[in-house]
Image (cartoon, rainbow, N blue to C red; front, top):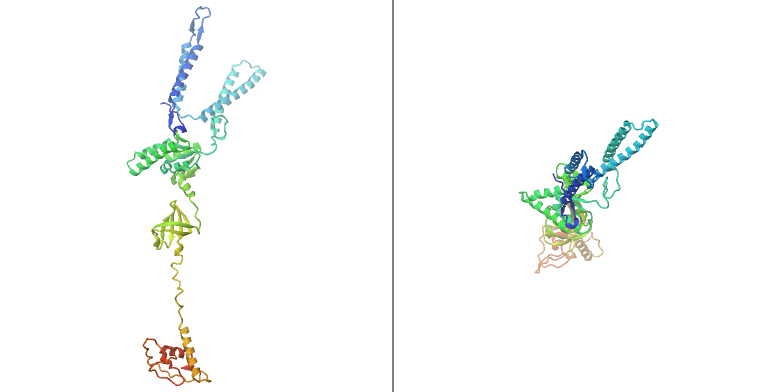
Length: 468
């Protein structure tokens, strides 16, 4: 098993650079140095020899074999742990250092006790020093590894409790790459945070691109294309995270890796948003970002909407805003295909987006009945029609009998079945007081009440019962 160590250079467009060669050279140098030091330490120079002959001390070959075994064991541990954490190695080193310092301090105390009780040179003192040293080293390493997340060691490139300075990185999932709006957002300069794309997300996109389903294959190819464009066009730092994460499933691995990296998950998947929210991992939904960027529409604002179709209710028209929001126009059913100015009457936020209601100003009075026109006369009641005729009859009676009251004036005999007066040549029915050829007259009266039509006589009689 070979160690695969990789790094990302943002200036190279996020291309993974392999460092396997330098690691191999370092291992060879390590072997050579260990063997050389062991051999040199057991060489012996004969001082009496004129040629300065060298000889190996007794048992030197065994020492060389032991050194080779030790170097092999160290390399085996290195190969078996390809994913190393700098914080863990630094914690082990710090724990050992603290244990050795504590053991040295205790050894001074043991020496003072040995001098006081005449125990100098006793094997028990040396044994106690070694045991205390081992115990303190173990406790130091154990305590540091278990509490490394509770403090921060100020050493360059070493952080036990990782603290993000400035903006947190954003970790993209499969849906965010397929969506692709992060590219446009990064080109605007609004987003300055670095972007992390895990390797298992890329593997999922490859699996979708190789799927037999046409829709899945299209989504996978679009996601890979967006990742390639992000590496080429985006001014942000794009990092491909090679380390695997614990968890079953891509969503759980993404949440665990985001918690470890203290990153913000960027997604369009509401299911992943809920999972991350339950585990207290920050997540941003691109749909919510797009919704917050829409212009605010207030009630009473005038918009120009192109009505494209009829609504569900009678008389409604449906149009769309520039950002795709739906507008329902009341009384706009007859304006389909036209661009009209409408007045916003309300809005409703739904799971699918914001729904705006509006009304066409020209249709404000529709449905409330037609207003009367100015050139049409107001309708007259029967009482109003009867009043002028009654006044004329009274006037004629008063003129025919001066000095008499209206009760003493002669009245025309009631003739309910008398035929109405014939119309003249013009077809006009004569009014009361006019001479009509062929109609009988009474002395002192301008005309019979029935001559003007039975309607006037009936109304006059109905107005004053004493006259009938």
